[in-house]
Image 1 (cartoon, rainbow, N blue to C red):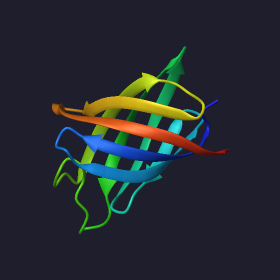
Image 2: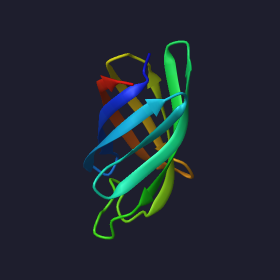
Image 3: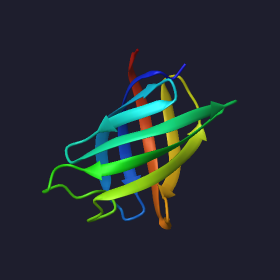
Image 4: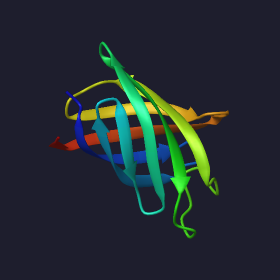
Length: 109
């Protein structure tokens, strides 16, 4: 069961690093960091999780792991695990902008 509060570490193909928190809850994901918030959906199929999230800037001084993007969608997937997951994906419409996300579960819901 992956429902819970998770911390996340983002790494982009542009060699940038970011950190945030997300909540997985009944096929919805919400979260944020010091400059952006995220809202999206996910599904678990067997031992794989797939999701898509809209990323929106709220802090004018922030820079995303992909540079000056203000609003963008990401698609991610990877093996599902109850305590730690390493997911990979890309920015929708910009497949060259790749990312990996290391998720660590901190609390159950």
